[in-house]
Each structure stands twice: as structure tokens, then as C-alpha cells.
Image (cartoon, rainbow, N blue to C red; front, side, top):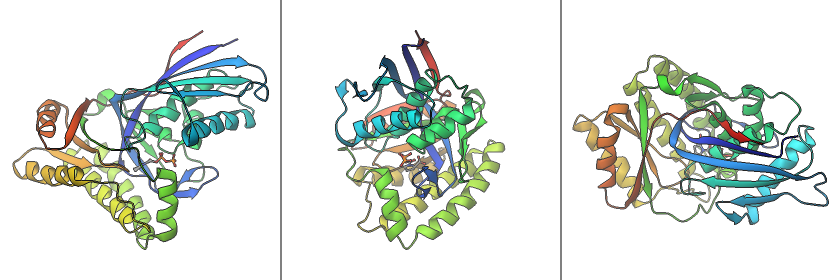
Length: 327
Ligand code: 2P0
């Protein structure tokens, strides 16, 4: 019987964003999304089955070396219970999860976190779960995690029970990303709560969903052609459309700060100077730059020299979620 499994998954950054839920109970997205997995932002999660009866020995969750308290611990525990309720696993589990990047600051930690957890839990199931099943299950933990199961460039439609499919293998993606990390406190409004607020209060929410569906189709074509200019321009404008929806939410979701704005202006200047680079940002202040692989190191130097940037991460396209050890 399997006792201990370690799995690893890469975080992903969306080129067409998921912001809004179609059905909260099953965590289905209202907008279709497309992402690039990043090799330099990973979560490694070990799951141990330590008992037969979770009512006697409750599940135990540690995130980055500390017992998980509050919402994050409850969310992971609830996710393990979902697998039990679906009849996929039984028993009590301990989860030890480690991110190699800042957690809970809008840097997509739930994408890699729930993908690594789902990949590890699957090893305890008697059911054979293929990548499609696993992506659906990861989505129930966090929508963006569905895309981290697939790795590379992945697309998650907004159908009734979607799974992400890999559009391009990591080695066939000609681009990578530089992530400019900006000093920040943990998010005050998490993505789930923020999306619900946007749907119920933003006058732009309906327009945002329409734009996202249009951008998704256009992005599929740009990616098929491996066209950086079309891909980058679409990613940037889709990011601004999502931000418009966030800003017009009540109370406003102002995830950006002064450094974010500085970086978003700087990318326009770099393009005017002839650099092929495009920017996107999520529910946090960090900025991710999309560029050709050969341009990433020079770009990292430029980003690091911008005032307020505390660190830069250079990532090539990341692998699908995988089990790294099992005993
Ligand atoms: C994305 N984000 O597509 C977008 C862009 C944030 C902004 O996916 O509620 O943490 O767990 O399903 O996956 C963040 O949403 O949300 C997200 P839940 P998740 O990457």
C-alpha cells in the first residue's frame, strides 16, 4: 500500500485570464483561459497516509514548514475531504507543501499548490486517473491549478466541467517569462472572494466575460502560429481588461501598486526601443514579462534595475505536474 508520495507542479501565469466563476460549488470558470507554466516557480508537496479513520485522526497540513492555520489550512483540508467524498481515497493524510517563491501574494501559488496536491493524492486512489480527470479534480481545488496539471501552454475552456488541455509542449514553446517580484504583503482580498465581488458589483463584468471569450479564440490562433507579437499584445490587453473589471468592483480591487504601474509603463518604453517584450499581471503587484527565450536574461537585468523590484525570476516553460517519489 502506498504510504508517502511527493509530487511537483509549476505555477502558471495566464495569457488570457480566468476571473469569474460560472458555478462556485463545482468551481467552474466563467471565462476560458490560456496559460504558460513557469519552470522557476514550483511547489513540491509530500502527502502521507497516516491513519485509516479521519474522524479519529484529522488531516494535518503544513505550508512552507508551518502548520497551516485559518483559511489556507481549511481549504486544503476541505479539498482532501472532497476526494474522500467522491470515493477516490480513504484514510487520514498529512500534507507538507513547500513553495520556492512567495506565497499568497498574487503569484499563482494556488495553481502549483493544488496541482501538486492533486497529483500526489491520485497515487493513493484505486481509480486510474488520467491527465484529463486529474485536471478536472485540480480545478475543484483552484481553477488555475487545472492548467498546472497540463504544463507548457495550456487552455482551460469555460464549459460545464472543464479540464485543461496542453496546447504546446514545454520544449516547443519559443518563449519564457521574467517575473519581476515587487515587495508586498499577503493579499487582502483573495481571488475567490474578489471574483465573486466582481460578478456581483462591477458594471464591466459582463463585458469582461465577452472580451475574455473573444481573446481566448484569438489567442488559440496566435499560439498556433507561435506569433509572439500577437500573443503578447493580446495577453497585455486581456490583462488590462481584467484589471478594468477589478477596478470597477465595489469595493475596488486595487491589486497593483506604484511599482506595478512603473513596470507596465516601462514595458511600453522598451517596446518603443525595439525590445520584443509584453507584460501581464494578476491579482497582485508582480509583473510577468513574456519574451523570446534568447531575450530573457537581458530582460531580467532591465527589470531588476527598476526601482521597487525586489527580485527577478527567469522561467522557461514549465513541465506538467509529476510524481517525483513514491514509497
Ligand atoms: C488566472 N487568476 O487566470 C487568474 C488571473 C488571478 C488573476 O486564476 O478561486 O486562485 O482558487 O479557482 O485559481 C486566480 O484564481 O481561483 C487566478 P480559485 P484561482 O491565473
